[in-house]
Length: 272
Ligand SMILES: C[S@@+](CC[C@H](N)C(=O)[O-])C[C@H]1O[C@@H](n2cnc3c(N)ncnc32)[C@H](O)[C@@H]1O
Image (cartoon, rainbow, N blue to C red; front, side, top):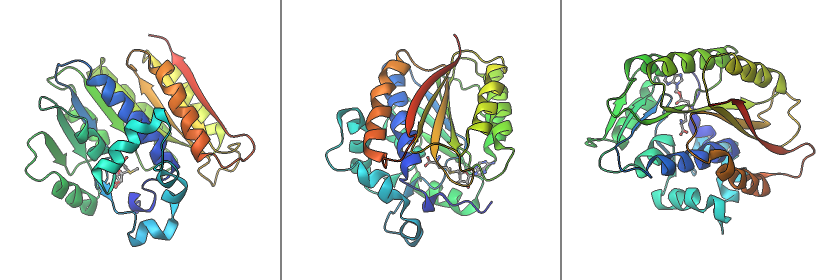
């Protein structure tokens, strides 16, 4: 467990993930009924981009730094939120900012230091529970929620080779318990082969209504490099595919580096 998200906060992959997360939460908030959000790999909640870790990699410079000035319309909601929250917000802070008084958030974080930092962010917040526990185990323990509607964000560090399999298994376990939930699972695009295998596994998983939203900055042929990233969404809200197309286009226009083979895709893997 060496992974520390502080080195990567605000990078291009965070921008894709968080811009889509904002859209999903806004869609959930359209109905007044309460929702439950589960963030299985939550991280410390917010990031100082002037910290030694963030400065060492400088990844945010080719991510959020490229969006902050005069953001294009489809990204304005996400960028305004980042500016309003001050420090670069991690997924728990983004979710919390879009909750109403009737909504609840539960976060799982396995690393003790990150967990302690996250607890501090939500100290005395009665709508947020922070668990020092394994997120895969949290899918079993915390689902289904009493609200019967909600969003599960699964954002593992992808440090180990079996994490795509773990993600497929985790989604199946969670879906069996909470069939109507919206699931958003982040994954890296380094090389096409493991991504194709993951998509094929999801097609055979028995889950319905699956869409994969992807952006890659260059032809993903170097397995040692994060060339792009994807978000697999199960049970996407109404008009997800239509609504996120301009978001992906705007992200590529700002984050793209002009390298050959860059692109976006929104692919339906399973029908409703
Ligand atoms: C990619 S980061 C999360 C970033 C966060 N979701 C965001 O968007 O701001 C992954 C986090 O998962 C934590 N982690 C790793 N394995 C875990 C597990 N099995 N259960 C819960 N957390 C885990 C790591 O410590 C790290 O903080």
